[in-house]
Image (cartoon, rainbow, N blue to C red; front, top):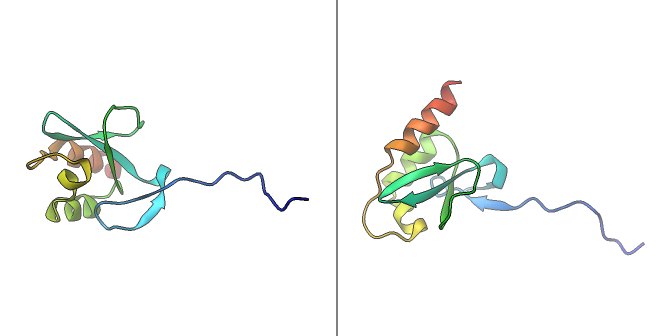
Amino acid sequence: MSGRTRTRACPERTCVGCRERAVKSELLRTVAVEGHCTPDPRGTLPGRGAYVHPAPVCVDQAVRRKAFPRALRVPGPLDVKALRRYVEQAQGC
């Protein structure tokens, strides 16, 4: 035996809100589309993505720290209304 296992490594990302590392599937990808921070739950939208826990606390921390424009490399502030609405609907289920 070579000592190698056949288990695949789970990709990890860092939440821009709380700065904790988590498995990619536990986080919500967001992208900047025309000045808006848009949720991308399937992870298929083009462009640079930033990851955040789908919890209002993490979204609020990221907005307070101005982490979305920095992570997405966009000049100026981003509108996060659509992202907050998506997170609130996901929590309300």
